[in-house]
Length: 170
View 1 (cartoon, rainbow, N blue to C red):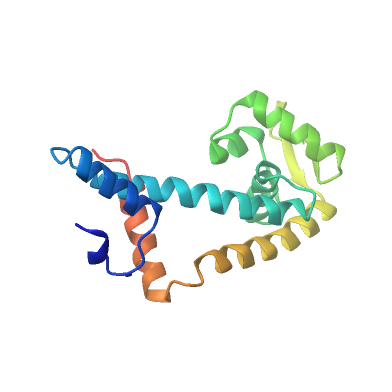
View 2: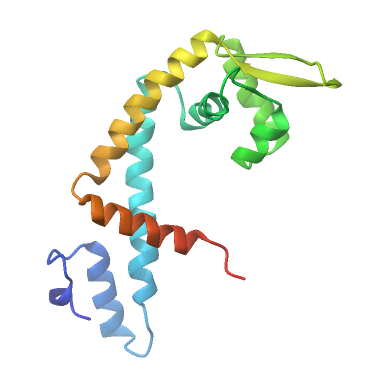
């Protein structure tokens, strides 16, 4: 497929790479590079934009992730560290480090778990809830800006395709 046959009509850097591979190695199908390469490039651009948004709240993406996980758990906005780790797919040591930083700032509090003498519960504080609510609004505005040039129909189709791509294959 040549650059001129793309439906959006605007070739990008990945198109150039694909054309070069087609010229140099016509025996190979480099088309998956068009998908994976674009996803990788978009990920870096979007991660930078999102990190900039969070930095206005003196948060990193990882800290926001902890606060948002607690916030979306519903009132009283608390979970045990195991549930937090599973939600974020991180190690115990990483979770401890994140919680230490957030607790130092007064955004979360660790309390004894009344149902497990050996366990603790992590609770979002009032300050933490206020901060994550403001950061969430800005985050959603940033994400909306990043996809604004896609119609609602295109956004739904892309979300569907990405979901299919990220679903483990049996």
